[in-house]
Amino acid sequence: MIILRPNRVTFAGAEWAGVERLSIDRVGTRVVKAWADDGPHAVFVDVPEQLIRVRLTQTIDQTVLTSPRPGDRGQLRVEPAAGADEGRKLVRIESVVESVTCEITDRGARRVIALIAVSDQGDEDPVVVTDAS
Image (cartoon, rainbow, N blue to C red; front, side, top):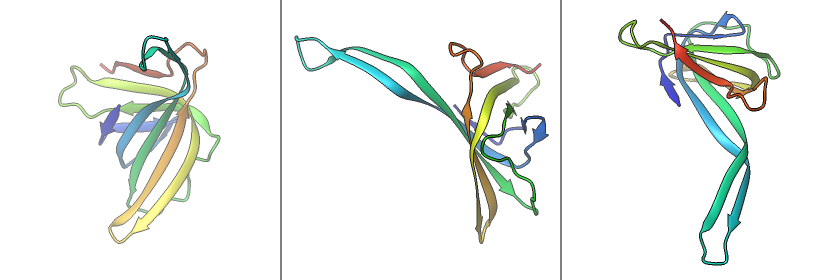
């Protein structure tokens, strides 16, 4: 999932201004594969464990003295940009901050925050997309 220039992003109730882009990646951490004696192609594949990593990039245009820290946990709420109120969505992800990096160039400053999604129940998807209206 990719969200470009969301309307609003908050984490644990704090607003994160200037978010330019956000990606949600799903990676299999354990993959089970099986082959039959009939040929070279897998006949069974399952991904019983996965990791959901969220990465967002903020444009920073003023001094920032506060920042999330690795290990901080909270709900990430993202309101993607939409043309009209009808059809607006809200993405909610319970997550933990994995890393925070900053970069300063001649074109400006940016902060990249990586989070890992957490499920309260192992069988519930921690990424929840609902209607915002």
